Amino acid sequence: PAPPVTLVIFGATGDLTRRLLMPALINMTRLGLADDGLRILGVGLDAMDAEGLRHALESFAAPAGGEGATERGEAWAALRPRIDYLQGDFTADAVYESLVERLGPDRNAAFYLAVPPRFFGDIVDKLAEHGLMAESDRRFRRVAIEKPFGHDLESARALNARILKQVAERQVYRIDHFLGKETVQNILTLRFANTMIERLWNSDAIDHVQITAAETVDVGTRGGFYDPTGALRDMVPNHLFQLLAMVAMEPPNSFDAEAIRDEKGKALRAVRVYDAEEARTNGVRGQYAGGAVAGHPVTAYRSADGVAPDSRTETFVALKLMVDTWRWAGVPFYLRTGKAMAVRDTEVVVVFKPVPLLQFAAARGASLPSNQLVIQIQPDEGMSMEMVIKRPGLEVATAPVSLDFHYADRFRIAALTGYETLLYDLFTGDQTLFQRADAIEAGWAAVQPFLDLWAQGEPEPYAAGGTGPESADALMRRDGREWHELA
Ligand code: BG6
Image (spheres, protein in one colour):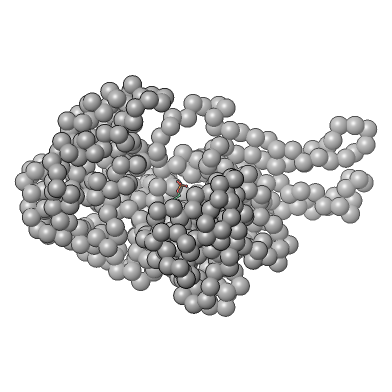
């Protein structure tokens, strides 16, 4: 189990705490990753007491029925009495004075900022001013910060500078929940534990890379957050760039947090920062119009709650990026993400170059499908390798086949949220799966030209339930390539 620690959650009555943190804490208790040394102290504006917070969290922590309900119930019974509540305004000193008192001098604490981003800087300032971030050999003090970390390069830099004035980088845990996903972590194992992969992992053998995060969900009730944010900020410099970094990074010197983060930072800094003209030719933005996703009608983005009726916010992005390193010279990375699309599919597709010469009579003059490694992040976690074989029979004819691996066939995958590993690492002090300041800033630097460009003009409409706007396909066609089919 993790060492004794108090998890202080700012925003304890919010959506993130209910939907993700509580279920993760229950799973950790169930799996023995947290024991009775764990205390939870919720901080929020709502007028209630500890019992009120416990009650508010109960149905999320231990939903009745379903698989594992008994174990969850037991874990909840153990965790429940260790939940406490502190009512107050995050910007007022009184809250921090109470925290000093409640935590005492020797208690380890992790402050989790599950609050709107405008509070990040204020809370860290106050924590530091009240001595709450000071560490000693008897206690650690850490702060976990949710996304979005900044809304452009300048604001991300300013926020990093403000935070790092108060606390050391080793105390800061910037969350990107994609890094909690098993299949995302597996990319490094796949690359660095398999000779046949890593030896081909460069521009000699690889034609291009595609990174896709297609979602069926639409903006739903998140209009207030999403409309000023958009798909680019919401998904690209963070989640998609984490995948890009895992694919593009050089082998680290060790599997230490800093060694891995050094290499990821270098890979992200190598993403070419476009000028305005390059951004115009290498980026596509779309916004969903009405349509149907899996048979359910979806109304246009502009008519959603909290969205301006003339909103120019993009709900889809496709980018062609270059990673300027020796390994990746000339190998484009195509990224796309969108809401209200035909299927939910997060994947990395590595498309290999064609063989230099086709000797088969039957195939002469024809082209064979390329080898492709498809790393399926979610759903149906796994991977497949597309290859070409001889079709059985007297003639030499070829057929494409797929070598498939599905996690679920081989392992029992625990139904986890992804936050279990992140919280455990926060408590044990392992920063590998968290974003360092330099990586965050490199991500923003690479998308900034698109943000600047898209401050004007309109996104291209696409039908809800489709695969995105026509220009996204044209972006590929122009290069003689096509998107991997969403499945
Ligand atoms: C969040 C975004 O960070 O990631 C959401 O704010 C998005 O808009 C979500 O839906 C996607 O994460 P996942 O784990 O559902 O693929």
